[in-house]
Each structure stands twice: as structure tokens, then as C-alpha cells.
Amino acid sequence: MEFESMTLQEKIDTRENLIRQMRELNETTVNGGETRDFTAEEKSRYEGMRADVKKLFDLISKEKRSNEIAGFAEQIPAPGRDDEERASGEMEEFRSYLLTEHMENRAHPGAMVVDGSDQTAGALAPQEFVKKILADVQKEVKVLNRVNVIHLNQASSIGVPRESADAADAEWTTEIPVSPSTTIAKSDKTWAFGKRELGANQLAKLVLVSTKLLKTSAFPVDQLVREKVTLKIRQAMENAVVKGTGSGQPLGVFTASADGVPTSRDVTTKKASAIEADDIIAAKRAVKQAYRRNGVWVIHPDILTDVITLKDLNGQYLWRSGLTDNDPDRLYGSEVIESDFAPAEKTGGAYAAVYGDFSNYWLTMVDQISVQVLRELYAPSGQVGYLATAFADGAPVLAEAFSRLKYKAS
Image (cartoon, rainbow, N blue to C red; front, side, top):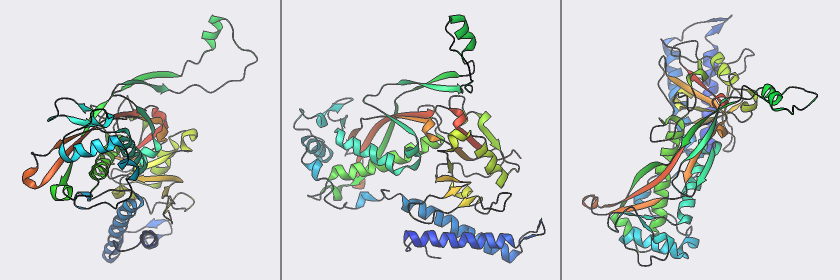
């Protein structure tokens, strides 16, 4: 079936119809509480619909990212979006550097050369250039819309308090303790803090632009480089928040760590290679109600297709499709964020999904980006390289705000 030519709403409607058919076919195997296997014909039909649904999940997710940037290296962006930047002396200097590697007016902050000589160093991009990149990255990545982003003006580290144990519940009392001994005796003994240093991990991304495109006289090269850098940084940031190792990069929620989400927050499925409705319910219920108010699921599209036919004890499907562009898909009442960077392996011991309140994930981003021009290196291929360097770090700061669904070990 051809889906690419459909409008977004047609894709959503088609996916909903296919899921309905899958559920109906699944119902035919249940009789009096007993479940039979699919016939060969039923299995072939079900798997065909499942493949189509998976493809539609991917297409819908990508199209809903209205600012997704792709394939700009050989395309001229639509004009008219850079009028304000063209009037800026800083941007003119920076644009000149991107085209020629030379700076004429070093008085402009946009002309600052960092980390070496003019021939080997990068230019520190003007703030308006950097702000647009960081704003677009945060807007395009759904996970980043949920995390607590802290902007720094220089590449330095900050100590982030990490709650290793929550405060005890409040108790009714008739008086306030005033003596030191009484205060100590009455003080909260359960609220414990650890500390993780959020540093300035370097993120370097290479952007390649054709020399033919650069020779177009009216071409806004800074816009092209910015959009390409935005895409590269977006992918890196999403990857880091989801499954970063925490070593020289942010610590992701799928990475088991005492400095982030430890194994004590894991919820194991009943089966080694399958997810049941009770598993989804248990993963969400493992998070306190206060965090469930803003809770979201992060899950790979391949695994998401396995849960769309699951029902609770009342016969209600756990997954509900977002029927319009602005309506998110939901799993057991909470928004679903699909990520291609989430684990997709369906084997014993592998992680399947994370549920939690991502405002308890802190991400530091330095409001500086340098760009180095690599002209000679890629000249044989008819391209110019732009090496963008940014700095960021991040980690979950409250473990109990998250739970992680894990396949039972086989």
C-alpha cells in the first residue's frame, strides 16, 4: 500500500483503520476465555497489517515534527526567513567566514576566532545564530520539550543535587520544635541527596555542503549551515537523553546507573519476549501519582506495534491513537513519545520502554557554538565541511520519577 503520498490526516485515519482490523482479527482467536493460534492465512494477514502499521507509525511521527530538516545539502531553502539576520553586522561577518574563512571586522563578537589560528580554528557563532539552533533543537525533539533545560553562558560544570530518597510524608503536629536536639530528633531522616556533576561534554558534528550550492550568489549560507547543524545536534541530543552512557556524554534514561535511573526502578515483564497488558500497567503504577500527572512513555516504534492490541481487565485497549495532528497517541492514558534511539530488541533482559516525568531530567546546554570551515579536506568530492562544536550534559536527577520496563530474562 502506498502511504507516502497521503496527507497526514489520511495516514492517521489509515493507521487507525488497520489497528481496528488487527484488533478484530485478534478477537476471533478468543473463544470462551481460550485463545487459539492464528491460522496460516490469518497470521499472514495480521503480519501484513502489522508491517503497514509500523510504517505508518514512522511516517506519522516524522511528519508531525513539522520542523524536521533533511536533505538541505543540495537544496536552496526558501528565501525571506533571514531578513533580521542580514541586517546584523555580526551575521554578515559570520556569513563571510562561512563562505571564505576570512574575517574582516574583528570588532564583531561573531568574528571571534577560538581554539587556535585563523586557518585551523573555528569562529564563535553569533548569539542569534546559536539561539535559533538551540530553540529549534528543543522544539523538534519531543523528549527535550519535557526535560528541564538549563542554559549556561560558558563551558563550565554545575553540581546538580540528585534526590537519592524522597522526603517522608508530612505529619500533623501541635507545635514547632525549637531546641536543636528536638529539631534533630524531629527532622526528616529519609530525604537524602546525592550529587552529580553536570559538565560540558563536547559535541562535534560535521555538516557537508556542495560547493556548487555555495557559489549561488544570493544563497544564505548561514541559514543552510544552521539548519544542517540543528538536525545533527537534534539527533545527538535525543540519542543522549534516551540512551547516553554518561561517560563524556549525557546519561540516558535507558542506561541503568546509580547516578540516574538505577535497576531498582526496573519493572520486569511476565514473559521473556512479549509484553502483556499487566506489564504496561505495572510500569506506570511503579511511579508515584504525583509524577504520573506529567508522565510520558518513551518507546521504539517496533515495540509500540506490539502493544496496540493489549487490553486491561475491563476489556479496554491500553493504546489510543491520536486522531488529529495535535492529538498525541496515548498508552494507558499517558502520552507516547516514539524514539528510534530507544531499544528495539525484544529479547530477555533487554529494555522495552521508559515511563516517567521528564521534568526530573536536567539537561545543561552551553549557549555557544563554534563552526570550523574544512574546505580543502572535502574539495575532491565537491563539498565544503563545516565542523560545529557544542557543549552539553544531562542526567535524571530523581530516580523515583521514572520506571523502566524490562523483558524477563529467558
